[in-house]
Image 1 (cartoon, rainbow, N blue to C red):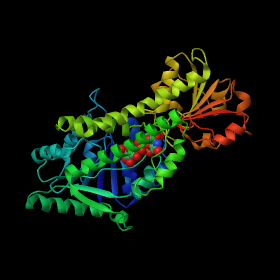
Image 2: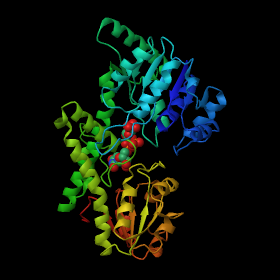
Image 3: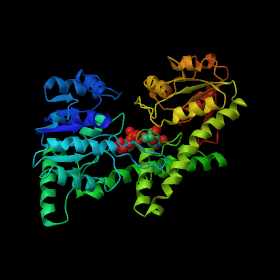
Image 4: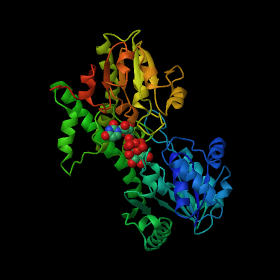
Length: 446
Ligand code: UGA
């Protein structure tokens, strides 16, 4: 099938290559010429394990190409819209400029029977608005919503072996239902290989499909903030949040995943999505229903200040003190620093007068773009030299696997003090090697 993918960021580029690997003839379109050139040359514009191999393989197969020209979408039957929906302003509302522009650019290229498929995370009601627009500018074309749940660091696997496929289609009147059924059947064809493996497929109306995505991210954010709230209780009482998470996680109704207490969530999705969700609920007159997400956000942001407060306590005042921050990406296996808790910690430490050196296996260059004054080290050891406190802010395997006894790190630092802001270190091993270990939410050393 001929497919176009509008927007070649994280979501779109991986989706385009993924669809080509399913055997479709795919064109990825983006307004950013530099990004398109990189993709054409087989270079990933971001760090994502497995993506570059897939990209090169699919370019070589001849089924995948990239263009800056919107008319390259002409002739495709299914058009995925995978552009960004960043936070608009302090209100937290989503900025839909790129989504609206993508659909406007597509409209003159659409033929009757073509299907536009939204993948971007949008406020509920957006699909309906776009469909109403299409009825005027491209009659005969249709629209469905097929949210994406991929995680950075696992993007290829999540695209090709998703937990579920959610198809939001038109319905209501018999005529609309018939169109919706046809649209769902077309998406079944697109995903035939994935569906053949037994992947659950859930068909629903457009609004529910939009809500599934924002509800899922809100739930994940709530789970993280819940365990971080417990972390505050643990610190006040000497209890251990990691043991608490293990124990409550054994209850299958709760589950252990996403109960990783620490520096909290960041990235291009969870923080902005919960704010946009709240803003949308306010617009809809049901703001109270999502009031708790304000608390989820506040708990999350408190983690960042808390880590800096801990560093201040450990050093007895941050002015002129050397601090090493290991990890700058918002999470491991990613070079993404959007709303990175680690970078927020660097910025706050610096604001309080500390001399900070940072290191990240992949995100250094991106971190410098956000914080140009950052003193970026080439290795973890470089960052730690003469440090009075070391903060592990992103749980890269490289840090988790450091042997505190054999690595020689202790000899490099001015003071063997480490804040494990992601609960990823073997506290006993580090303590045995002579380090003072402060792990978030793990008050007790018993
Ligand atoms: C998230 C969702 O997990 C995806 O399902 C969704 O598709 C995506 O947003 C999106 O909307 O596009 P992602 O932002 O890649 O994916 O990252 P996550 O793995 O969800 O991690 C988010 C943040 O939560 C990271 O900063 C991570 O360090 C933090 N986290 C995660 C914790 O603090 N504790 C945990 O237990 C898990």
